[in-house]
Image 1 (cartoon, rainbow, N blue to C red):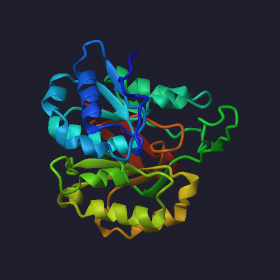
Image 2: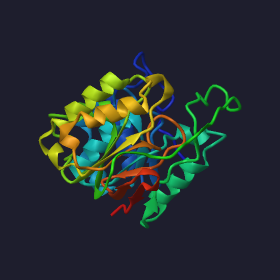
Image 3: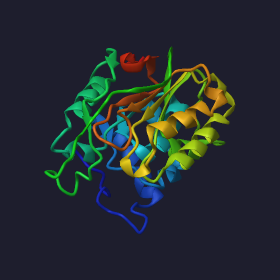
Length: 283
């Protein structure tokens, strides 16, 4: 295991310079001893890097690249520019979780160690605790399973991640196509029903959004106060989404545990009440 030489440095923006981050990203992809790359955490300004990434270098040195939240900007751009699959899943820091990590680890291993299909099941419990403050003071909430907001079956390419970060790519050369996609989206506790509504609407104004085949929505943090009722009303208000399956309460996003999703991989989904299923075919 190795670390970027500036991994523990930060400035007033909790980051380092563009040059330092680009050097470390390129070094990680070109180093033959590095088999996979785990981000430490997101970073509000991750999208600063996009104009400086050597996408040809990344395409020539494919390897596992995994993280979530603001890392969505890098993942969307890499898929658009190279066609390579990256993974929306745990940060490096996530592996420090002491309790309730089994689901996250199992999903990560399924995603990155083989090409066999695997199912994203609903976890039995979930937690929104700041685990990094006290590993023993944890509160797990029983999970009642997926919410099929709109029923139906569909399949497509997985595109998405953190919704507000994905929207930063709109109108740029780094925005991946939504055509024939299974769109998976989540947001953190800084979002609430009103911002989620308008952020989703903004994404649906993309020219190819009319060809979205299905939507997966991650579980919201408690502080966002996005209720099941509010979420259903938001989805029902989107005429663009009529007739396609929508599954909510999925284990993606900023609560634990979370599944690992291959961006650019293939998914087959069935939204049907308590019998809803999400299968990842990867290829």
